[in-house]
Length: 250
Image (cartoon, rainbow, N blue to C red; front, side, top):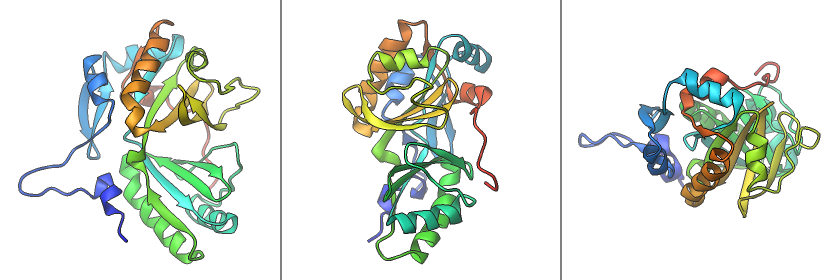
């Protein structure tokens, strides 16, 4: 059975209509003054003021950004299948539960020995999905690949007060001693199931159910603004960068 209907980048222009994918947080971002651009088929909040001012906020307090446009692919299979698929598509990387691996331009997040989430920029999804499909086809019949981009909303929180923001709505222990850089923590966020990846020293990627996106925006906004934080666009995230090295041969 085809799962193309789950794939945002599979939408095609027809009859003069160009499909545009949007986050469930678009309305909230627009109300906060976001500027949008069309990137890789997604309407993306690129900024609220200037990238430099937003980057400054990310280095002094905390900024949060809607990154629901990130591609999200789920690999399923036996631990042996998983090791072979990841090694083939992630430059020989070996995954470890509790840790996310940065390789081949993506985050590889082992949720269980039989299930791994792969997160990447939307422009990389088609190529990565094709390579994963080939690797899955070469594995045992029990292996599979599912497009889950629109299953999950996503936010990036960055800044020295990011952990303090999480502490106001999340019971996960994100202290450096418990969650080092590249730490992967599934658990409850704002009383719902979620996942947090510590991308850098003061940078966290949070995933949650797509239907909860507007609620999560409100929760994060309330917590961050009390600490002097503000929403930021993806351009500011590019200025700040991800403070983690990629796996060798990625």
